[in-house]
Image (cartoon, rainbow, N blue to C red; front, top):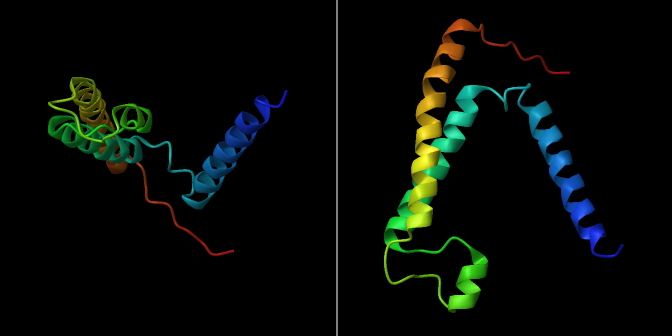
Length: 109
């Protein structure tokens, strides 16, 4: 039972943080435009790190005793390209959503 407790705590913390950010953003965290921003930012991080040979995985850094590889990390470049493809799909959806929905009026409570 003891190995399960840290996972339950991490999952509860992640759910609580997601609920908090969802409430603070007025329910906009699941809109395509927000997901497009996130996918674009992650794509840039993965493509830059992978093309320079920087390992993002802490485990791989620990095993290799360095954060840098001898060449391009194609797995990170592939993840960056997949995220770029996802962002390319989400950007038109997000911009269409932005044009069709009225902006929300926020009131202080």
